[in-house]
Length: 537
Image 1 (tube, rainbow, N blue to C red):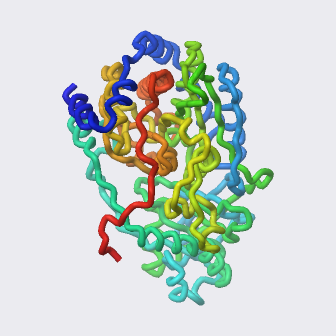
Image 2: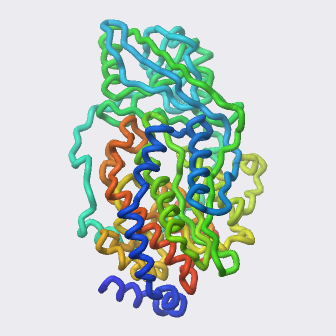
Image 3: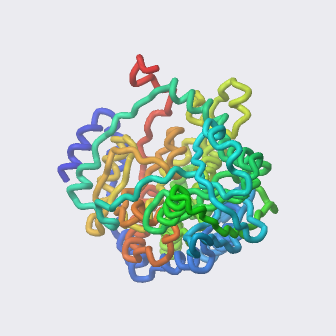
């Protein structure tokens, strides 16, 4: 309670009336019913199993993702949600793996752990060729390797030394650790550097430039080293735009297997590898689709609260903790509330985003379509780029008519760990409200309200236009250490007790936010920031 008193004191001069109204009593009878439905009648693991075991890895615009789009809509309809729809946005090509293999042939036969890099073409059979080490990270590296690559499979990564784990791979937050993560962190702004980054990004087509160079030199394909130890592979790639597909096959090789290849090259053993990649491109529809569904509100003139998670994944495994976990939690919260036949004052909307793994494309499309746009830069070259590439550099923000209707967005995308609290992105007025709203869930471990910002997932673009978007604090488990995007990310890594808890907490917060007398306090609409260091170049 001391934290609540401090936070209320901190915001009393800023938002006394809104905070007092929003921090009304939580409907504890409704919380009891949510607990009963979510703990004794849960379907969260059934949902997660269908997404992982039945559908599998859900790369954007792949056949598997199309199946997930169809299935999730039908589930929402079967549970009785309203206005279930697929909202499209331009993305590019689909891609899927049929089969793949990589083997060392000489000086001795060894099966290697490897995966095709997303959106690279197949090998059209088996390629067998010597390997050559030719690290390249920028176009400036090309000249060093010119004339040396014909007929070879090129190792493009400079290997790093093996690393030993110094921390446990699996952990949960302690109360002391959580208490140390609540402080406000001052933002830093360097407008000149931001503008340089936009201009550099506009010219950064390195994967395609590397592909063109390797083809010109007569290379047959390329391999890169996985960035994790322990035989893990990922296969992430980003050349999904129509008309911008590489022509040479590429594979990611487990770090240990890749280092062996490099050692053999350096020792003069002349290693030869076989590389087989059978992949498919899917061009039937270049649009990707967000899946949306509602529990209609009874009043409040179009206001709504929202929960979301991205349903797409990479395909090295089944995309379980990233992010079937979040998808299942959001869908379970919807199921719980419909099973209780709630009649919220505000509409409760559920979003399953697409294209998150390639750059938050789905949630960005929603923001740009429904919430706000930003003024063009006035530079023809930059303004011709996709909006997301230049978004943060464009001012002013131009709110759309529906900007104020979204009063709170809750995002779930940090693995299978239980909810331990919420990051309020520097919004001290909202922090005081969440202290009260989380009290019924303290016994479930959801106790912490942090002023810290969090990034890298689908609430980000909402925050950039002044919409209250929040990411939960979750127990880390082994999400970052070994599961995120990797070949281990299967159903077995999900924690049923944690996902049941998360769905209950999410359902409770959604219902409370939907019924509050006043919407959550908002931060001011962002304007062009002043440089934190006025003398920085």
